Image 1: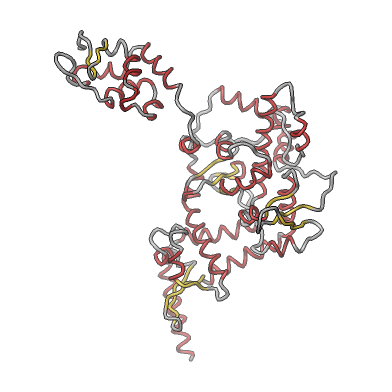
Image 2 (image 1 turned 90 degrees about the horizontal axis):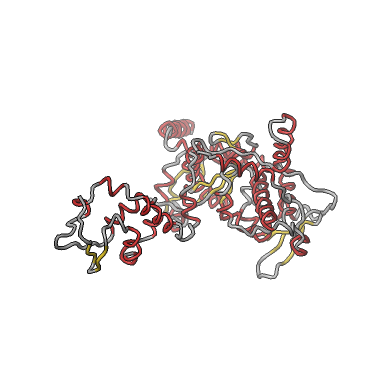
Length: 467
């Protein structure tokens, strides 16, 4: 039962708490009311408030919140109090990008893939360091100095021993220190990937041309391309083997900043506009007549995470967004921006069209990558050149049917959802197939290492007998 007398909170007389819960909130907001409580639903907020506020009771008033207020009353405050709390929570500050990422609906197939892939990324970084050495080996002392930068939590030697199918640790008698090198199996996979990249030189040139065509100036900083050279399937020496080898198509010019070069597209055909990757899906659906023509013309293929609940309002917004016209990723909008001729009568529709253009550019960018995935931080280097004035991360989260963001491995990686099925690429290319073999060695871990040791001992014994 509630006391009929007034409630004394720090010397201030207030009426019954259930009759004036809103006044209690306003009077004691400075005590310990934090943003977490403001973001809770109204029903739970009223209950948590009585637990967290430093209430002091004395005399014939309440001795403790639980002893005097029943749990039913705590959980179910009056409607007026709930409504006041709801109005209060609506004045909260805007949610941050980090919180937005955490509230996304998880897709377990992508999360499982990235759980394994994060180890693969560390292996690739060490692999590149070894290949950059003319002797194709690396001292453990040097690698240990880079442990923190490479996120090797238990040190370099411990990490290398986890993957005996990829790395071998040996002792150099001359230098009197341990070294590491790649196994024959790993080197064979690296050669296979290199051969696949060389065989796809025409595709690589086309990817670079398309990437430059999405820029208004038909040019991009070379340092930004260096960030995604592996994702685009470029050879590690692409500056010489691709750019310098094709002076009719590409040109490197000095930028205004020191030690910075700009890659510019020279071979400009004003009558040529590449077809975006999404057009293949549109043509297929137009033939099948599985969608409305207005949705097909400007629409994108959507596939939402399993278990994600889609309300009628959300589905209606997606359908309207599918019909929204926009400028394609290869269309020049520089004059439209300068003259401000874009949909003067409907500025909101024009802004939505520019946002959809940004989605189309990112969609095309991911379609140009080998594995249809890239780190979000790497894409941000192209924002200025692609004229994207939006938060890239929020753009991905606003369209969960097109993209998926994973935060595994302390990095944010975005996937093109339509290119994957159950965490696997639907149409893998030769370069991706070779990289998948290296990933399989990573997943193999130490399994089969005993057999490798026995085989190496047999080989050494055979060699001694032969000598």
